[in-house]
Image 1 (tube, rainbow, N blue to C red):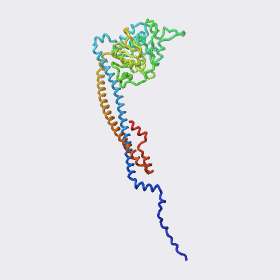
Image 2: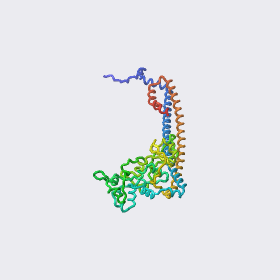
Image 3: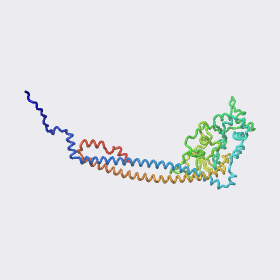
Image 4: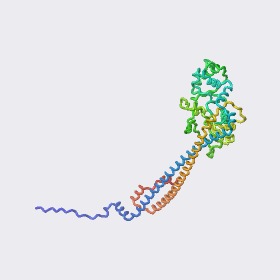
Length: 440
């Protein structure tokens, strides 16, 4: 008989102190004795993160206000330039009105008078062309020649002031004022042909036309080919029916426009409506091709004194309405002028009068916009100042916090490794980030 096998579970043995993991023992001990220190460190880390977030948000707010203020200043500068241009236009009108109708009739030059002066100037290619344009039968007889020629420089634009017309013609000189303007090189070839020996064929082109009118063309003449000119490639003045060029206004070292500055000559010529929408094969009009090439950035001033004071701002020459002229920086034209009869015709008084009320209305609207913009700038500046003040206070608070954190860390030489690891995961800020905020 077998003895029953009574299975007995082994009795639990008490754990030895040596069997407990030392790290777990340390955790128990640390949790028991240093829980208060850990809570304080964790609170400091949370406070650090909040301060960092506040500084970053304030920095973004400062940047936004700075960008808004910069944009408003740029818009105001453009508006100031537009107001200046409009004031110049109105001052020209008042100046013209003050001279009286009698004086205007005596000094103003119409397009018919300009053409008359060209015809009386002598046997020239320009005078022959004007005769051809006036004779419809002959004009139709030269389709190859007339198809490409636009006209004479002196007849392709108008100005609002007689003194301006006189000074612009003096600046350009007779050869340029009488130059024939062609769309393409085909027109240049049609104006003059040559035989096999290279001599001019007097029976064809503009020479043949002159012979038919009993006018022998001698000497040279200037021809401008628009498609061969390097055009202006910048922006245009917005909403301007004349498509004036948006040129950068001259500025003194103070940032102000020179006193007496009236504008750029290239924008002070009014292109006739029939030529306003003319485009070359590459899509450029008369202002950005012909006028820009003969005037470039020629500046116009009210008086010679104004022009001379603005010398540091003059890059492509300048003229004044009282007879001053700087052809290029450092090159002055002095002495008395020989009067030139060939001048740009003046815009009609009725046309100028009809534009006056609309121009005055535009000036009032621009001044109102400027006032509103200045209010926006003041408000934006106040917001920027407040944000900078808040940032400075928050920065000082953060600096104080960093100093207190360093003092606290110095008093905790036996920090548990797990606490060190958690603090490393929640470090307040990288030194490079601290430098970024401290230097704002």
